[in-house]
Amino acid sequence: MSAEVISRWLTGRVAESTVVVTDGLGRTVRSVEFGPPASLSASDHPSGLAVRDVWQVTSRLQVDGGARVDSSRHGGALPSGRVGARFVLDSAGDTVLKAGYGSFIGNLPLLMPAFGSYPWRHDRSFDPDGGAVVNSVLMRPEVGALRRPKAVAAVIGLERQIVPGLDAQLGFTNRNSSRLGTFQVPTVDGPLRLDSNGESSYREVQVSVRRTWINDQQLFVSYVRSYAEGELNDFTSTFQGMDVPLVQPGGRARLTTDVRNRVLTWGTFNLPNRIVVSPVVEWRSGFLFSTLDHRYLYAGRPNSSSFPAFASADMVVYKTITVWNHSADLGAQIFNVTNHNNPRDVYPVVGAPRFGQFVNSVGPVLRGYFLLKW
Image (cartoon, helix red, strand yellow):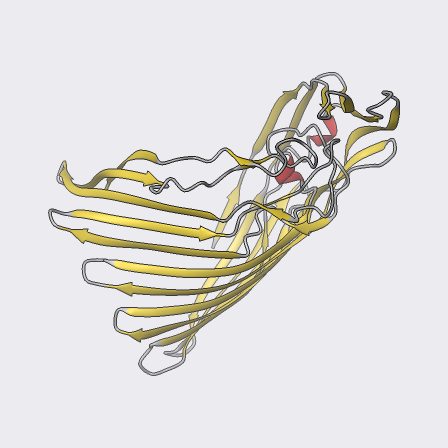
C-alpha cells in the first residue's frame, strides 16, 4: 500500500506585446493586440491512496493487480485500477504471454486553472491592398470545468526464446485518453474557453529481437508501427511556453509527434582493457507539420505534411576505472556521428519565397560521460 499528499503553487506574471503578421510584400495582414499585464496564481493539493498485490496463481500464471484513488480540487476523488497477467505457455518456459488493462489518472498543469487570468486578445485580419479590417475577434480567456486527465490502456505481448541467447518479442498497445485540457477559439467576440473535454488515441505494434552474449554484451533491434491522433488545441502542448500569440479554431487530427514507422538498434560490446562501446542507430518517419497561409491560418488539412525521415547514429564509449574502492565509468557520448541532416524547423507559409525549406539541423555533439557505481 502507498499514500501521498502533494502541495503545488504557481505564481507569475504575463505581459504581452502586439504581434503583427505581414505578407511577402511587407503589408500587414493580421495583428493581435493584448490586454494589460496580468498576474497569475493557482494552487492544488492532490492526494492519492493505492494498493497493489501480486498473486502466483500457478507455477505458470502470475496476476498483478492494483487499485488507486486520486483526489484534488479539480474533479474530487477519482478511482482507477489495473490488472496484468503473465502466463508461461510451455513447460520449458521459453514462451511467455503478457497482457494488461488499466485506467490511469494524470496531473493537471497549474497553468490551466490560471488561464482565466491571462490578458484578453484582439485578433484582427486586414485586406493587404487597402488595409481595411476584414475580420475582428475579441477573445477573453475563460476556464470552464477542469478535471484531471484520464487514460485507458490495453497491452498484450508475446515473448519467445528462440535459442539460448536469442529472444524475440511481439507487442500491441492501445491507449485512449480523455478529459484533456482543450481550448476553444471563437470565430466571433467571445470567450477563449478552456475545458477538460479533449480526447486522444494511440496505437502501436512493436517487434523486437535481442541477442545476448557473456559479460552483459547484447544487440537489440526493434521496429514500431504506430498511430497517434488528438486535439489540435491541446492546452498542455500549445501553451507549454507560457503563452502562444496566434491561435485558431482546432479539432482532431494526427498529432505532430505521430511517427508511423521507427527502427531502433542499440548494443553493448566489450573491448580489451575494460573498455565498452555502446552504439545506437535510430531511423524514423519525420514529424508532421501544418502548412499555413499568409495570415498563419491552416492552409489545407492540419498536420498533413511531414519533415524528412530522421536518422542518427550515436555512440557511448567508456572505460571502467576504480575510484575510492568503487567502480566508475568514464568516457564520452557522441550524437549524430555521421552528421546526418535532421532539420527541426520548416518554412510553412504557402507562397513565401522559402516555403517548404527545412532548416536548423544539429551536427555532431560531443559530451563527457561519467557514472559512479556504489
